[in-house]
Every structure is written in structure tokens, then in C-alpha cells.
Image (cartoon, rainbow, N blue to C red):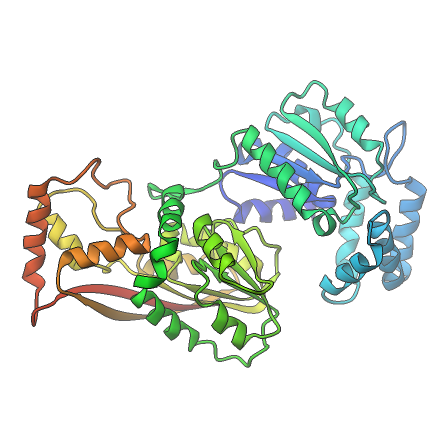
Length: 467
């Protein structure tokens, strides 16, 4: 079962990534690193022991106590899980509120799904393989962990003393539930680790030659001007919102994927008043703008849609308007959406097709051979990718939208203000010559009708359902 789980993780993960795991998840991250080191850029473990049960001088949970817990779980899962919860919050500064938060976040009653994990905790011993890992490692331990002894810090430091790429840190005041009671400390330590090891920006994927860092930087610069020129984006988003035909309150967690300035957050909040809202975008500048203009408890995440930092089966609805056109690995994107969506969940999205701005592309093609207009995937590309993801059903509808301008310069200025101007690596280096620019403007004039210049958009509306 463990091998199947590891295979399933690698099947949907990026080709190379940093893996962070909490508790047993930390051991699984180490297993992946040991098994497929070429896929693992770095490992971060949190409140995790390479040998969970102690013995022969190694600090860990008492073997007899753990054996007793496994037997108790088999006899009465509900009571045993309640006891386990109390161990997880032991040592926390505010144990009671933390316990309530933990139990409120759990969906469903205790069942047999935990049994394989208990078996792995009993058997896994990574004390030999851990020092052999060559990739950077960060092991974060909690000062007041009720399951992983404090003495592990010195034992782990000694174990890794000849592994220069490894570091061990203790989170002051944290319990075993450090992700809940010490999130800021975890973020700070992880950020510093990634920065020090050169991994902070290494995970941003580059697909079809498109550098996601360029995409993020372009939209970050446009955050302050985006809403003032986002006419098409508003219209398409409103059209997409009409597809939310489920009853208000039907979703518990809503992910606004590629949220930009957060312009659709109010409508999503109104439609799902009791849901948790997560705004996720690749561009940090957009998120900073969105957070500054949102007076509620919305959660904002800077991340790539093809590597979502969200738990499996944690989202009910994904709303994404004119964002996924920057994802050139649709199979990876849909695999991530399949992973985070709960059974019965869905993703409603809009994106742009390859016929977008064909007038501008044709005008540039008349004067040089460079790539001046962003390229986007077709509906067939999306359908083919979704067909390779088991348990997912995709429906698409294509519409043509046309914007009108008096001058080509108005269109170019609007694209720049949106952050959506040419960011392909095939764009010409340096400034375009005056002669070339004038030639393009003249070529575009052939499209003028009734005194205005058209700019066409191929808009694809989709609904991805998890069966």
C-alpha cells in the first residue's frame, strides 16, 4: 500500500520539487527522496521522526505504548482517536482551542483508513537512509511535541553531522500541531532554508519555453492598473459566475484560482456566505493588492496552479476566470485539480484559445518573424489532457468576443496595463524599431471596419467535474 501511495504522489507531482511533510508525511517525503532522488530538489520534515518508536538509545514513542494504541484503535476507533488528539495538543499554549480546531477540521468519523499509516509508523526506520540523501534537508521539530520527544533534536543533529546539506531547527513553544499553532515560524524557517539553498525560485515551472517568473512579474507590476482596464475580464468573469447554479451554501471551501486583484471575491462570498475563501495567484503583487482591499478573513496564497499547496480532497469548488491560459501543461493542471477537489466537486473556468488576438498576430507577422503575441492552448488540447485524468469529466463551450479601438496603441497600452502583453521568450530582444512598428500599425489598418479596429478573443468556458 505504501508503494502505491508513493507511486500515486509521483504520478501527479512536478518533475522536480521540494517536498514538505508533517508527522508521518515527513517520513513519506524521505521515502520519496531515497527512492527517486532525481525528482526531489529538497526535503522539509515537520514534527517527524525517522524512527517513530524509540529504542536502543533512539528517542521516540514508547514501543509498548504505541502497540497498545494500535490495539485500542482496532477495538474502539473513536475513543482511541480522541486519546490521540489529546496527545497531539499536549504541550500547546492553548490546548483546548487547538483541540476544537483540530476536531472541527476533521471530516467524517474515525475509520479503517488510518490503520495502514499506523503500520508504517511502526515499521519505518530511516536512520540509515537519511544521512545518505544528497539534496538539502530541513528538519523542524516542536519544542513541546507530545509525540516526538524533544531529545530528538540532538539525536538527529548527531545523525546528520556529516551531511552538510542538512539542518535541524526547533520551533519554540510549538506542539505537535505546529501547522496550526506555529504557522508563522514554519513559514519563516522554510523560507530561509529555501533562500539559503537556492531553491526559493527554482520550483517555478517553465513550460513550452514560458517562464512563470516572467508571468508573475508582469502581473505583479500591473496590479494597481489592472481593474481600470479589465473590461473583457469583468465581462467574462460575470458570464462564468452565472454557471454557479448550485444552491448558495453548497460549497465549504472555494478556491479562486488566479484570483488577481480579488475582483470576484465579493460575488463568490455572496453566493457561498458560509464557505472559506482562498484566493490563489502566481503574482505576489496581485495578492498584496487583493489582500489590502479585502476586509475579511480570506486566505491568500502565492502559488502555481500546477503545484497547488493544498491538501488532497480539501476544496469543493474551484473558480478560475482567465488564468489557466498561462498553464502550458494542462494534464498536470487537471491532475492537481483532481487531487484537491473532493468527490463531487467541480472547477468552473474560462481561458483563452489560440485564435485570440489573431489580428494583432497577423499584423506583426507582416513585418517580422518574431513572436509578438502570446500563444494559448486549444480546446482540443484541454479535452485531450482531461481525458488522461481518471475520474474527471470536462465540458467546454467556446465563444468569440470582440473589443474595438480607435488606434492600435490603445490595445497595446491596455494589454500592458493588464500585465498581459507579450511575455513569451520568442519575443524580440530590445526595442522594436520605428520602421517595424509603423509597418505593423499599417498592416493592422486592413482590419478597420466602420471606423474602428477589432481585437478578437477566443474565450473557452469549461466545467471540470470530479466523479
